[in-house]
Amino acid sequence: MSTSHADTGAADTDTRATDSEFIQRRRTEATALESELWDVLDEIPDPHIPVSLVEMAMIYDVTERDGQVTVEMSYPCMGCPAYGFIENDIKSGLRVVDGVAAVDIDVVWDPVWTKDMLTSDVREKMRNSGISL
Amino acid sequence: MKYEVFARINQGDETLHIGNVTADSDRLARMYARNTFDEEDWDYLAVVRREHILEVKAETPGVI
Amino acid sequence: MDEWPDPAVDYMQAIVDTKLILGHRYGQWALAGPSLEDDIGGASASQEEIGHVRQLASRLQAQGRDLEWIHGDRDATEFANAACLDSIDGEWPTYMASTAPADRAAWYLLDAIAIEDLQGMLTKMGEDEYFHLEYHDARLETLAESAPDTIQAALETTLPQALSFIGPATYDEETDPVFTSGFTDRSVAEIREAFIAHYTDLFEGTAVSLDGVDFDAPDPDTWDEARRRVGGGSISEADLRQLRGTENKLFEIN
Image 1: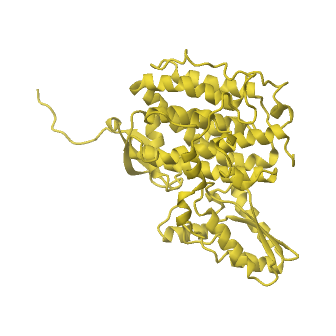
Image 2: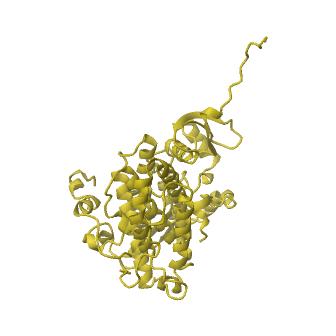
Image 3: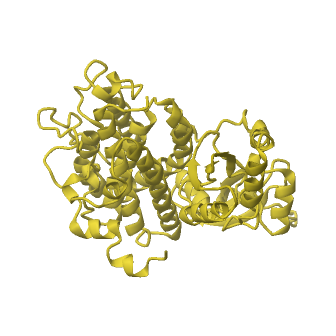
């Protein structure tokens, strides 16, 4: 790493435009069961904002193999006070789906979450709720 | 010193006056503004010393 | 690098312990600041440090360290936090002069890590740290005018302690075991130079003199490599109980 992060606070803006596509691409590669799991995650609300974890672009990938599910996700804020609640919601939501034996959550920071990952529909939804991001 | 805080949410939006902070230096004022108004993810956030704001108003011209 | 060399695990443990105690101190002082803005910033920094600890702790767990142990199930003398955080013996200016060097040193150590799969996480942490460090410097600049004697006296203790946390000057590119293992991309000696230069510049032309600061610390012969300090000392038992949440167990929500 360079020494410049703390000095500039600058995030890499060049890659942001494609991040949303990155997540959408992962979802389109899903199997039938994985797709069902994505739908379940799309029902879990963000504790702070009236949109789902999927709409918040926090879910990066969902993979299933022999009943073992791995959710790859990130958080907008590393110090998220609802961290444990969100992980519990994910695990309890997915475990009851037929074909799921166990759920692992893999928190990743690459790519780093940015508000540019939100689609315009989600932004509109948030604006209508009085939240500007 | 008093500082007025200005911000806009998205690029192209109008820059709005959103509040003020009191700080002992310009550098500290920037941090106070960030601490206080960080609930929004601003595209642009700026502080201006209150004494640097110049009011424009009509006045009676002097005669002498 | 799936398995980190032992010195690298100790290096990360010292960063985690420093951030854990930093988060604790920021929280303890979050209602004691001179203005509401200082308090809001402190509370926010506290939350961010704990968030950093959570992520870094899971990486240490992957290297074989026990998570409960990391989060406080151990003796105070097993913590490898920067010694300037052991206790804050003074008022707000002393608190600032104690936490600021520890936070900056911890960031410099993290920023030096060269492991590829940590880079996204470190970038995210850097976004938080920019505001911690900028705020600290802004605050130290104003305190250098309003309370120069207190700041100077505190820094004469805390800067050498922060330098001990970074490591001895003898750890250069040939001798620093964390650098030679490839875990970091710059040696302790280089990190120290950047750290010393930063504070020299910050206080240049102010009423705070750093002439009395021992910039050669720590003595490499007495330096404790695991705890990254000299001369023992530790956080208090009261700190430990708070970190473990002993009294708060009653209110735990499961």
